[in-house]
Image (cartoon, rainbow, N blue to C red):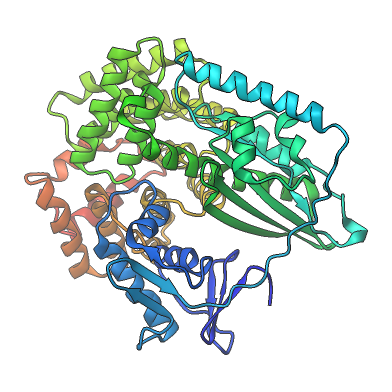
Length: 531
């Protein structure tokens, strides 16, 4: 059995490939969120996991009810044939426990190195003193991440083949997120081959999180396993395994580094703000809390997120984060129909705020993302794409930017490039949210691959109301008129009075390729949109 495989009854779960096979080796279908719940439980076999722990791990940026988890558990039991609930055990008043056989994970031997210990302690204690002084001096309470050198578990003939290239690449990519600090290599690599407890490493380096793991190369395949650990408690926050054929060393290395950086970065962005007390909230933390709220784009969450960003503008006018966040909230509110003011006036204000953020922090990729969103809403797609490209250049590991870029690409008729960008976002962020699925469903509709688009959108966990128009279009495109009408009724329930005329105003008259707007309106009428 591979190290990434876990035996659950007669079924086999491959964590790295996110596949479940029955006893005959046939794939078992499982929804995206249900698979994420299964992986979370399977990597902690025999452990009682609370409902809240599971929800926070699988829906890290979303507020969901326990009903969503209950549905996933039911899916998993059906897939495993666990009618008697012996594999997925309900723990009364707590949550669930999965009975599975977890393969032993080899750990690399750590040789004690006595020489230089005094110098290491002096250096690292100096770092700790600086970190503590900075925090006492009133700097923003950003999370600090330390990346340790990966253990090399390769067979002897290939050991050292990649040296520290992956670890160094992960450090470089994480450093592109301005939301948190990354401990320098010369500090975190001091702990190579030293049997040091992660909690002690965190104290010495002043790190809130520690990234550790291993790399294993057999001459053909490269397998990388990564764990993100909360330094204060030693608790595993997340784990990930990536396995790639090493057909092109540098391309594979780049893919793995981006994947790890996106996964770790996204987890820190959502995990860290939830752990801070209200007294510690500053502009950056407010921005992260707002981002977490907007992963479930309800009007209530939008109002809360907007209030957080406005507070940042008032209390910290020298920081770009409040301007960035408020600009994005205005664009989102305008699109969702949550702002009563004329759209042009709202976008003018959003543009001014984004430009203000750019003047404060011209290298902040989120500032470029904010102005790109405004330009997309203004239907200025060529310039919008340029700002998205700049944002991706500054940080290619944030899937939010990649997903956002698909909007102007699709309206400009660059279907294949939009699909490529969205698949890239999915590859770097395996726990992507519903927005990616929505955009991918749109791209498939536009490419006239409606069956693929419908399957994609039906895997959404909590579809935003506005996404039901695309769902209706996909049903209409596949000839399922009754279901198209049902989806449209869901949309119109929150947007009473909305009509074809509103849809014409919303979308560009020159939506490319030519004829796309008319095709869209035809599907909207078939689904029952008034007008």
